[in-house]
Image (cartoon, rainbow, N blue to C red; front, side, top):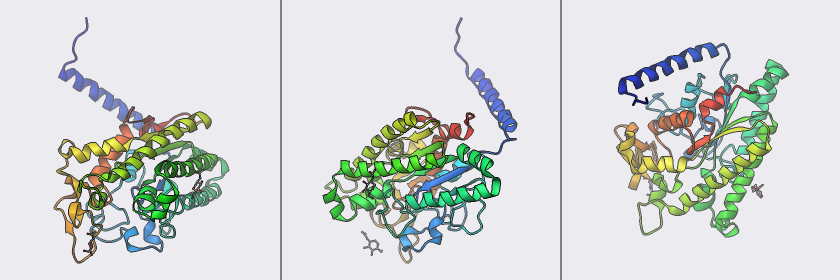
Length: 369
Ligand SMILES: *[C@@H]1O[C@H](CO)[C@@H](O)[C@H](O)[C@H]1NC(C)=O
Ligand SMILES: *[C@@H]1O[C@H](CO)[C@@H](O)[C@H](O)[C@H]1NC(C)=O
């Protein structure tokens, strides 16, 4: 006869599962964790822009950036860590260093991301490390791994590694909605999305040809709801989300989903994890208290309405909240460390339909070579 599982039974089952998980972790620990290669924009940059010649708003090398974790700025566009830092920790890896950091150790992976970067080379051209260049840097690393480890070992490392890509927001924000009006004349939204996705597809195929097999993607959030776009919203409902930007993000996510399913069919051994960040973030913006936040709308650090004016850390005048962990947004563009931690947990453990076909934990632990 069936019976309901009582609370105490549930506790026992959970504990058993936990013990199993721990013992399994130890038995697997003879093998080092898969390496982690990161590509993208400020959502994942760990400090590459500290080393390039660019304008001040493309860097996060001043206080109060980093205050919640490092107690100093590191170049991360966050009050502390970003999502890929948490993922590295969950995977049993140290913090993954920026490619441009002098004498960094690349054996566990490399972070190639650059704040402001886009898929298209035109996006913030000359001010960032664009995606094509990030992949050229990866090629340098691949060559040096071959020299260091030998061809066979390097090939295995490259194949087992997880490639995480978080990019696209800047193509739509700086490149389209807020950019040179000529772009909006030359391309309608559908054409522009197709161009971004077309270029992104080529880059994924290129990384696959270089040996990459396991890919994690971060789709775009409800872009129109970040503080700076609420502030710049030209529509009558000032303070509401800037719908044109959100619509582009949704179109991008829809197209990305289709492309990834197609690549999975075409490319042998291609495994991926794709997360629909759009609704995930919107829930937190609209119901912050359900997720441990007090404010889902205003940036902790910035000025003007919603803290939407990107003045964080720029003396003499900007506002800084008492505790960034209660804010979804850290500055006018970027989430707080607290939000990134929730995001990393969702990416690591999530399941369909919001995330799939694999979650990031499964990408790291996939057995089949
Ligand atoms: C990639 O972007 C360029 C503009 O930088 C565009 O001309 C080209 O058509 C795009 N490629 C694809 C495959 O969409
Ligand atoms: C943002 O702040 C700066 C410095 O305080 C000010 O000069 C500028 O007008 C503000 N911009 C907007 C859009 O509010």
